[in-house]
Length: 630
Picture 1 (cartoon, rainbow, N blue to C red):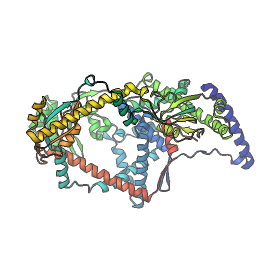
Picture 2: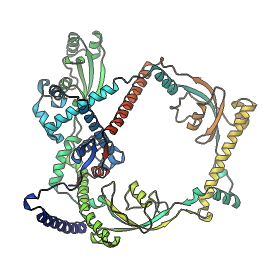
Picture 3: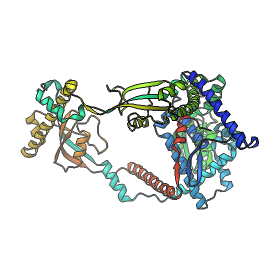
Picture 4: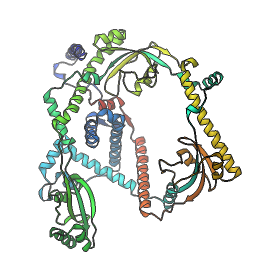
């Protein structure tokens, strides 16, 4: 298929280029023919400035590399899009631009010396003696694919953003009344007695009479109604399918591997123990004692200090002087005292996790697939223009598709969930909510425009027929109706028995006595909060919600996993914010972060009113396909 499509596309592209050249000669003359960008590549406009495709693509590339290091090499742009990460990246770039514009309005500036200090302090650029290494600096910029001027601009912008963000969040304090109230609400515990009324077994329910089944079918039409379906004539240029027929050349594969191996490798990590002191002399004594055979714990204790385990860290996770010292040692080694703004550090290397660079064999399947998809999408771009022209000229969809060698699919029935008339998934369609929305928003007999799918493919279709929702006759769904009727009978029986148990407990004594009369047992729960319960507890989520409305001694009922349950609140264990300082401090930090984020969000929303923002969703979509049109 793809070969036929490519051959047709080449001929058409040549014709287009010839026409453009003739037109340009006639109108402008030879001297004025300069290659220009013909498609709008602006991802977003922010207050009169623009964010271009190249910048956004670079950010998305860094995001993709980061995610591949975290979750594995198979993570791709489509997965990032489904998780909303592409939209988040664009949104973050817009927010960054808003802060830059505001910084300019406020006349905030960043001195060259501060930029210089920031670059020199970056652990990636440190060489022997904790000094700035120009070679490491230039190599890192090459790997990132950015110029020195661009990097300096990024540093300046980041510092300005931090200045504004810090000013906004520095006043974020959590009122004591709020902290206490939320702590008490979250950590209050309750204990309840619970009696579960089981629903029983379907086998114990007798068959419904014809009249009962007919009534149930009539009163529950939604259970037995087939959804609206539509039949289509579809042309779908699927990049995943087309990519299987393409093979990138080895040179391009190797070039892509050289780019990816640096970003997808796993850096060396070291498990570090640390003693941090403000006294250089004490730090020197500890380092000397360990080197003479003492344990770090004993040496620290004898000097009134404690040992902290920092975890397994990469070089980039540490301040430059500390990283240089720690990564120069073998496993078991101890550093001499290292000075930073925090004090004097003595570190011991507990163990070393070597770094790994992925092999070509490991990355090649993903690289080949990604490049092949790009090649397929590039082919599609040329083909869709011809298809669009043919349709605009009135050519029937089938004939227009034949003209570019594209397959035509007849879909007999498609519902809004992407299933056929029997409820099974329909194959060979775009797996895209926008596609099904368009199908059910298009009138019978109408042919759509050519649309781009989230996977980078293109589709166009004609709605051939519409079958409205249909209530299926009882004879067609008899077995389903009998099953549903029995399940309803079971649940209704359990509900009635639970209600009777609740009435008996309220009027004739305790829940325990009512349960004994009904032949049921009482289970006392462990203390539980609104948000934390034992997964195997007799207290269901629905019953828990009811119990937190009660006073001690009161009763409630609710659905449970196995039927219905009746619960009696036995006691309330109030939460004391002063009893657990660690939990209270953790909650204060969470609330402070939430308040700070809320302040920043409100501030950014106000900036969007001051500096109008417009996002070009069409260009954003090309970030998912990994290509930008020129």
